[in-house]
Length: 329
Image (cartoon, rainbow, N blue to C red; front, top):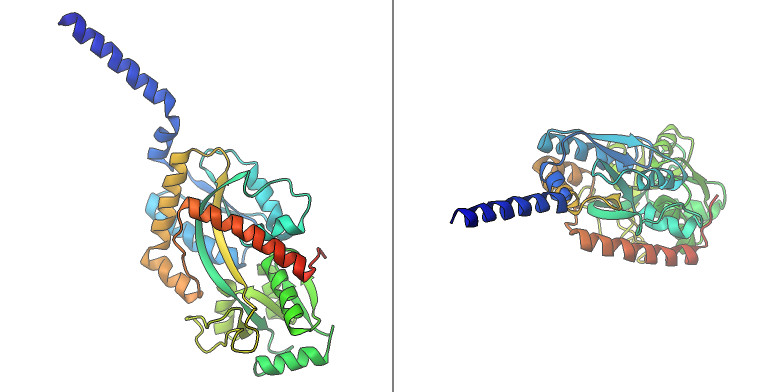
């Protein structure tokens, strides 16, 4: 019996040791995060991504006791920040908050040094919000969309629109609008929606096709004027604002969405824990209220569903880019 007991003890210790060495990720994930997590936001501060990234970071810190530190790295329609995040260590301490723009980029930038589907692992869709046509009321004094459209058609090339950069959804929304309304408006790309929005407020550009998340506070404050929501229904946060379908553009639907990825190779259990914390944060009363005030919704997709969504968006935007004839400025 002594020999049998000793043998069982040895075998038990060996099995425990093997388990410890065979599943290092589980050990890391069970205690993740043990230090601050870096969130790469590929646009300057003040844009739509920030409107959701910063409240999410605050709620994450409240839940985990660890900071989610935002690192704004703008440029080239969000592709500079994506490239930086793709090369980060896959240890669970770098997360990338990208957007719809990153599913457009493969069709606009032929020489990207990263692949969204091969170099990243999808974690969660964070928010989805319709785009809205907003104007500087001092530069464009149209009382409604009908008057605005008449003005655009009377003065081709006179007016311009700012965007978060060439190849972003702001840019494509403008090109689609021009195509469907038979108007010509000059595109002025910026290094992010934040700088473009500030120039719109200052009166340096005439209009934007912006995500409602970054424009909502300025619309409510009267600094810019909204004329239309890009979709087939009104938004609950701005029930007085007509939809594109209502003003005669039933095919004009553009939605901005934001999501989280981690570099390929990040341990699976850390991915799962991260997805769980994000879902918990966005489902909190605090973030639900912020999302609602920004006209946003949280489509609760699992990792596999989000990956499928991203794949479909890449194909959809490739078709849009080709049809619109959009090019890099």
